[in-house]
Image (cartoon, rainbow, N blue to C red; front, side, top):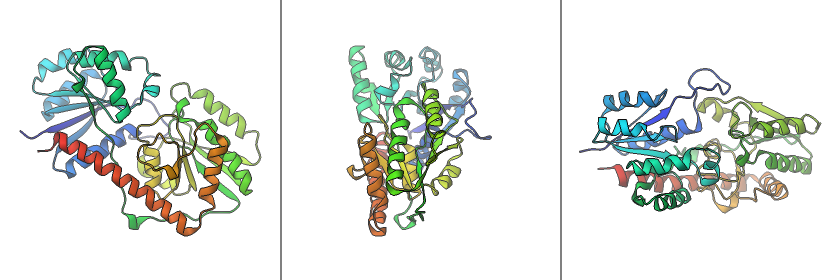
Length: 346
């Protein structure tokens, strides 16, 4: 019997700054995995539902062999109802967070124990998260084989499509996009960008997404506004959350993207910058980027030095960096796709 995978997301209820379909990093990452599976001859589909009670309808309609619940939003007790209704289905909950971020969500670890005790697989998109959830399984005296690995993928553009952007000498645009939350490290990156811009004698435009605030990020956004509001050498540019295609267009006006987060499993924003031919400065938390792109996320001075290094590269060196970013992603996605195909292919 051929495998049929149904990915189920919870519909987004909040308004993140634009009307219409509310895309998120999660929904985009699921779409990329579904497209990859289909390209490899594996039947797959993604749907969004409003709540736990709508799952049965879509499972009955699609008749999958595997249902992958994207992120932790289904109460464990719901599987006591769903499993008897669909006895031939392998139920999977997919974890997109490393432990430091997951610890900020009050239900994740308790729910993980309850999922595993019900025979629901917990699939993580990062190797360290697999190791940590295996500890949870062992402590709960549950089979650790129920903790599995399902990495992200990304549609990498062709190398010949790389188009370095034109820069101005008097203004520098630094992007620090993504939801504003503590472990994203916006403030230290803002200080690094300010120091860098002063070094090159340019006015800074520091770009953030200001309409998706999570996990105590309100104070971070307030601090950013308070700081930049008192500076005449730097502006805070606030963007709403936007559809993926529109975001890629915005990135084409960015000189350097900073994503020196304190914890990451993949980072789609950095992947988008790679696709838009924007150099990325990151921490060592992003698994697909090489050491050439990494700086200490706790040191604004080290990150400022990294920004200066990128800025001073000549055209040939800059192009080599952009090529390297894409090749890094290609290698990562090749291995990731193989992981999925080995598990679910014929």
